[in-house]
Amino acid sequence: MHKILLPLIAVMVLFAANLVVAQQPGETDSQATWDLTDLYPSVEAWSKARDEVMADFEKIDGMRGSLGKSADSLYTTYRFVSDTFRKAGRVYVYASLNADEDLRESETQERRQLADIMFARFGEVTAWMQPELIEVGRETIESFVEEDERLAPFAYQLDDSLRNAAHTLSPETEQTLSYFSQTFGAPNETYSLLANSDIPWPTITLSDGEEIVVDSQGYGKARSSANRDDRKLVFDAFWNKWAEYRSSVGMVLNSHLQTQVALSKARHYDSVLDRELFQDNLPPAVYRTLVTEVNKALPTLHRYFKLRTRMLGLEEMHYYDIYPPLVTLDREFDLDTSKKITLEAMGTLGDDWVSLQKDAMDDRWMHVYPQRGKRSGAYMAGFAYDVHPYLLLNHNDDYSSLSTFAHEWGHAMHTVYAKQAQPFETAFYATFIAEIPSTSLELILQDYMSKNAKTIDEKLFYLGHALEGMRGTFFRQTMFAEFELALYEAAERGEALSGDRITEMYGEILRRYHGHDEGIVVIDDLYTNEWMFIPHFYFNMYVFQYATSQTAGTALYEKIVDEGEAGVENYKNLLRAGGSDYPYKLLVNAGVDLAKPEPYEAIVKKMNAVMDEMERLLDEQNN
Image 1 (cartoon, rainbow, N blue to C red):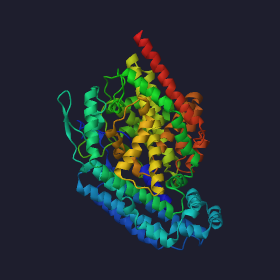
Image 2: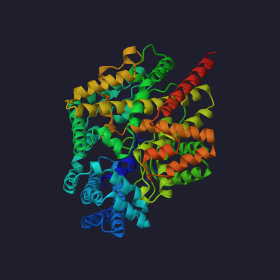
Image 3: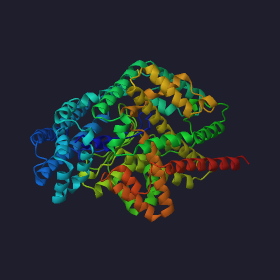
Image 4: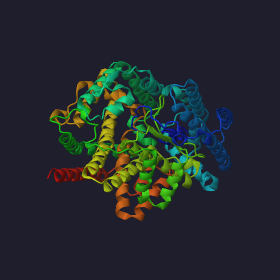
C-alpha cells in the first residue's frame, strides 16, 4: 500500500521553478485569493474532519487478514481504505494551503504538522496490506477482480501492488519502516525551513539607489536586471550567503541521500534510480536516452548562449548573464490580462476547454499575488477529489508570470479532466505524466504570443522566452538529473559527500553544460554553490521528468498542429486517462515513446528553428 501515497507527490503539490518578488498591491483582493471554505467552513470543521479520519485508521488496523477471504472482503477493505484516504487528502490540502499563505504563522504550521502526522499514521495502519496481498497471491486476487465488478476501480492498484512483490518486506518489517516515515522526510523539512525562513539575507543597493533584500524573492527579480553590474552584485551577494551554509546544507542533503540509498537496499533494489523508475514502471531507457540525447545536443545549447551574447552586446558571457531578457517588453500582464490572453490562446484546444477553464478562472481557485511570508514559487494542489484544484501563484504582472499562469492552469485542467473521467482510485496521474499538460500549455501560449506580436522586437521577446524555456527545462533540468544521479551513485559507492565535494561535483557538470572550458559561458567558482538553492534534490529523481514532459508536451502539441481536431482529442484523452494505467504505456498510446531518441531530436530541432527565425529577424532589423 506504499504506492497509494504517491499522488501526494505527483498531484497534491506540483511546483514550478519560478520565484517571487516583493509584496504587491491587490494581494488582499478577494478575487485574487483562494476560498478555502470550499474545503471546510472553519478551522473547527477541519479539526473535526481530521479526528474522523484518525478514528477510521483504527478500523483499518482491525481489517488484517481480510484480503484473501473472498472478493467481497477484498472489496470491503479496499473501499474503506480508499474512502478514508480520500477524506484524508482533503484534510491535508486545507492544512497545507492555509500554512503556505504565511509561513511565519505558527498556528497554521502546527496544523500542517498535524496533517503530516495523520498521513504518517495512515502509512502505519496500512503497512500490512501489501505484504498480505502478495501472500494471497496474484492468481487469487485476479480471480476476485474477475468475480466482483465492484473491484474494477482497484484493478490497476492491485496489479501494481502485486508487481512490487520482490520489493515488499515482511509484515513486521513493513510495519517498522512505517514508523519512520516522518523521520525519512526530515532532511527535506530541515532544508525548507533553512532556505525559506532561517538564513539572514543581505541587503544591497542597486545602481538606481534602490535597496533590496537578496533573498530568493530579491534574487529572482534582480538577476534579470538590464544593468550588468547589478546582476553581478546580486549573484555575488546571494551565493556568498549560501556559501556560508555549504557545510550545513551539504550535511542535510547527504543525510537525505544516505536515507534513500538505505531504503533502496532494504527493498532489494539495485540502486535509487532503479527504485524510482520501478515505481512508475518506466523503462531505464527513458532516463538514459534523455541524458544521452541532451549531451549530444549541447552544441545547440551553446549556440543559444552565443546568440544571447550577441544580442546582449557582450564580449564574454558570464553566468550572471543568463537571465535578463534578450529584448525588453514594456507591457504588463495583470491578472485580468493573463486570464484573457490564456483563454484566447487555448482556443486551439476547443470551445469546451475554453468554457471549462473560464468558469474555473472566475471562481476563487487561486492565491495570486506575493505577500510577506507566503511560500515562494507556484504550484497546483489537486488532491481534494471532491473539491476543485487550488493554485498558488506569485504573480508579478510580467510575461514570466503569464507563462507560469498558463503552466499551473495546465496542471489544474489536467486534474479537472481526469476527475471528470476517472473515479478517485484512478484519477491521480504519475509525475511522469503530470508535467506534460503544463509544458504544452506554455508552448501554446508562446506560439500564440509570437504569432500576434506587433513588432519585430516583441516577436523576438517571445521567441527569446521560448528559447529560455527550452534551456531551463530541457537542458537545465536534465543537468540537475545528471548531477542528482552522480550524487546517488557516489553515495552507493560509499564515497563521502561533504558540502565542498558536492560543490565540486556540481561545478564540473555546470561548466560542461555551459561550455566554460570553451569560453562559451564563464562560471565563477562562487556560483557552483547553486546546488544549495534547488529544493527538487530532496524529491528523489524527480527533475528528469520536467525534461521528458517538455519533450512529450512538444510532441503532443505538434500532433495538435498537424492533425487538428484529432490531435486535440488525442491530447485530451491522455488527460482523461488520469492514473488508470502505467504512465509510459499511456504516453505510448498517445503516440510518444520517450525511450527512443526521436522525440528528443525533435525538440532540439525546434530549438534550432527558433534560433534560425530569430537570426533572420535580427538580420532584417539591421538591414
